[in-house]
Length: 304
Ligand SMILES: Nc1nc2c(ncn2[C@@H]2O[C@H](COP(=O)(O)OP(=O)(O)OP(=O)(O)O)[C@@H](O)[C@H]2O)c(=O)[nH]1
Ligand SMILES: [Mg+2]
Image 1 (cartoon, rainbow, N blue to C red):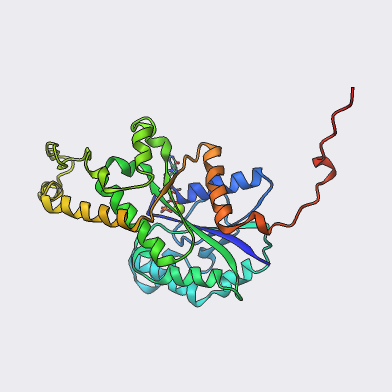
Image 2: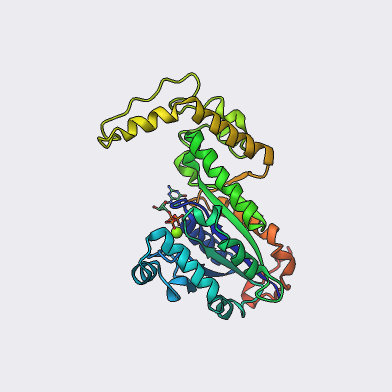
């Protein structure tokens, strides 16, 4: 019996938990079953109560207090602890049938997706034939507001690509919070970001980009130590531009990162992303034909 799952990943505040919640609502409205697993040991409140919560095994607060670690070290400790206690996952997930979509809500610490091998090990465990055998895909969310700052957008795309390469599972990239940019950026311009390439840097509106005047540092931004001024100097320097061009070139050459658009307030957008997830994990192919209940039969139209 196959199981199906999606890991919802991305940097802090990208909208992962909000997307999980929208996905659960959409699945429920469509008479589908969701099993919500919170794997963020620091998450406090949820729109939908998790069916399984890592905090019942270990919380970030426990890790920080008992082991004396900071928030990032504490998070890594929590994941190492999870990997030593995989029964916590097996016992809860083992009995789920192929009808369920298991939704893993991940933390936002970026190091988890870039250079630490814990998530690949977790993904291998979840999808390994003979253990849970979950047909698993990843969705990596990046905030659409990043498109107004090309350096941020390409840095975010680089971390998405890094997660793709590390995890080695089917992967969707998603530009989240589209509602926040749809009035600021023309649709045609926005669509160029869906398949990023280095030509996006040619018309970068950011300070320091070619043909732009450098931004003046405001008192608010300057902490008095001159750091903000120094940062501004670096970010309009030729080296920073060359770095961005190299990163953009790398992403273009690998040709792996494409984005889907997500606006959680629009159900059709959530539904479209779910269709991609379903296709990737071949959810529908595995479903048994269901018998309809009496109330689900439509009366044939009366003949006149
Ligand atoms: N306008 C808008 N706001 C959103 C959207 N999705 C999430 N948000 C807001 O963005 C903030 C962060 O959302 P979360 O869903 O908690 O983000 P997250 O990625 O789970 O954050 P962490 O778990 O802390 O990494 C919240 O204030 C949400 O209300 C969206 O599609 N549009
Ligand atoms: Mg979250």
